[in-house]
Length: 277
Ligand code: ARG
Image 1: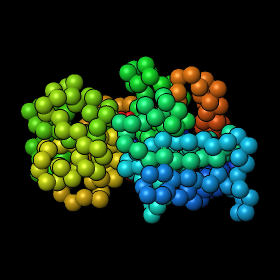
Image 2: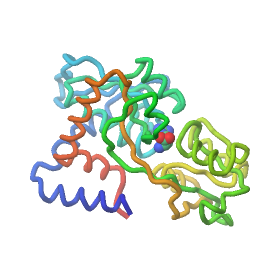
Image 3: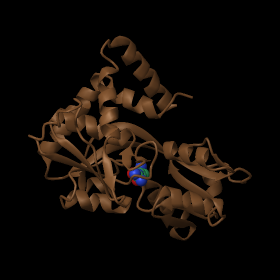
């Protein structure tokens, strides 16, 4: 429902802004031109001109992510692509910096930004009170909904039905945290990636997977015999995480996000990956 509102807003903004459409093409090709080596890091060239390297005056802006979370971040050949990669690219361009992408376990991201290994996290990361104790968050750029995937013939039809069943989650995600709180640690199995949790569901090791709605849709589409329940478990806000002491970067990122929201680029990037139903 929220998404629909977002898309309607995007359509409205496109209709009302003549310039809508010009900026995300360049960011899309720039993000797609990033290259990842050995599955560990991907660097997206910030160039919008064919031959000119992007200005590196502002240095390198390193984004940490966990690139197994379509449509926000995933691999296309060797490149990390997706909504977060493109937003990060657009932010880097606004800051006159060159974007580099580091792919790592989701559970390592907060420490990586705290210790300065990366400058920011874009990973469909939800703003939570607990995380706010360790990092700062930018303004929100998207909404997520914790959703439930089950086998097509499952008797589980709502969050309440999860009681007494084994639930697969991605380690350290909000799905992991909420399910452990609501159904007890013993009912929850944490996997390194959402894809691994889905694999466990397919082989009957768990009875359900709790994960964000858009990746959930992607996993259901890619795997036969699964369905997504249309009941919402928890609704949450995604934002960019930054080290607490890096208030300068936080301000710059919020300004860049504001501009990207105002000129329609943000909605356009999201609309490229999430189609209206
Ligand atoms: N929104 C959830 C959270 O913040 C899940 C994010 C998982 N992201 C990823 N790139 N694997 O905990």
